[in-house]
Amino acid sequence: MAVSLCRSRTASSLNLFANTLRRFSTEVTNTSAQRTPESIVNQMMYSDINSRIGSCMPLSAMRIGTIIHNIELNPGQGGKLVRAAGTSAKILKEPTSAYCLIQMPSGVKKLIDSRCRATIGVVSNPSHGDRKLRNAGHSRWLGRRPVVRGVAMNPVDHPHGGGEGKSKSSGKWGKGSRTPWGKPTKGGYKTGPLKRRK
Image (cartoon, rainbow, N blue to C red):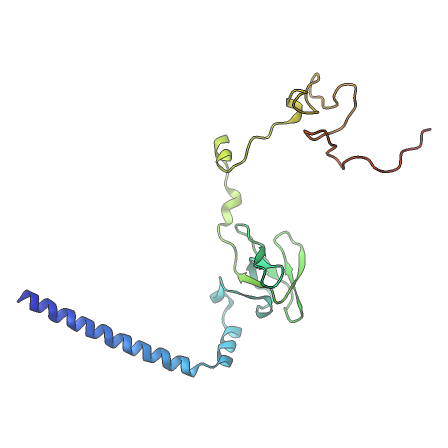
């Protein structure tokens, strides 16, 4: 009795599922047959920009004031700009010509080829920069090694090392700031004409 009741319920549910699937497939074919390429383009042009967040498309297909990220520098190259957490750029001029004017997160305005693609919206995790490291080990977990000042080293380890007090002039040899390998750090070696002696 119980087995026959279970079989009848399973058969009825399968029939209901098949009918629903058949109806859905006919509706999809009817709607796809009615939609023409022109109607699809019109729908994309006049749809709300917020409904397209996350869509990747050429800059020429976007409107002025659109917030974008992951921007290409050359067509087909892949996203190169505005990819850090919480960043976004803005389209300043209508991208009708060959180039599109975009304002970067730094405030710099940049002309980019209108054929380049970008993603609409803002990169996620905007609070990434607000995170504070709890201890020195937290910094090491991120792969950052300690930074030791040259004046805190010995002369054998760094050109700034040794001397009495916080001196980096290497004693009587009045040398300026140097790298650990002895090269000048501020502007490199002096290559200009020598000063005239008075």
